[in-house]
Image 1: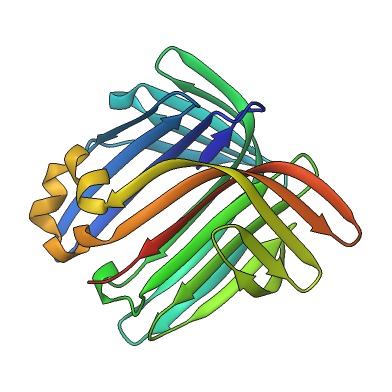
Image 2: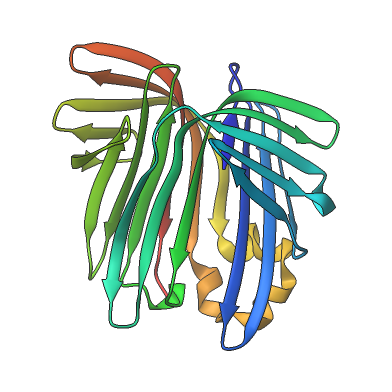
Length: 247
């Protein structure tokens, strides 16, 4: 889940349940960024997550985080990858949200996004070399995309809750048949290997997962977005990333 304020301050929340070979673990994390600084905090304690109607309620007690995401666009769900070993289900729960969030003593309000990714096979078995993902949200429009490249490749987008074919996806532009998104003034949110960006806040994961998993490299940005669709344009904020998946 994420939220970006009108002026561009961003908060990104992650929560995960992990079950593998009889081992169970929970993980939560919050990344907050403004023009001056970025902070990230993680915990291996349980979180609270619930949904009621069009609302998602979340609480990370150990991290002092609580928030409410209220849907402003219809959800979309898709199987991204499937094999005899398992599958990857992408559920875009809220392509566009109205968000109220508390992180510590600070209150955030803005537009946001929420998704759920379910894997029934270990992530280190995914046939992937590079993943580009992102989401654009404005008062009028939403766009989310997945560009998965490797031994198995797929690329698609969801524009205002409708599935679309992608023609081109880069770090600065997404082009569909009748829609294009340009990303400008990109602010780095996080960069580095998962071992340095996630592992320090969750040391127990190092004992559960293959060390090679933490060599995956990610780059994440917050950018201004200009969406052109069907002869009109809208301005909003983009959260996007590229992940190099070399295990």
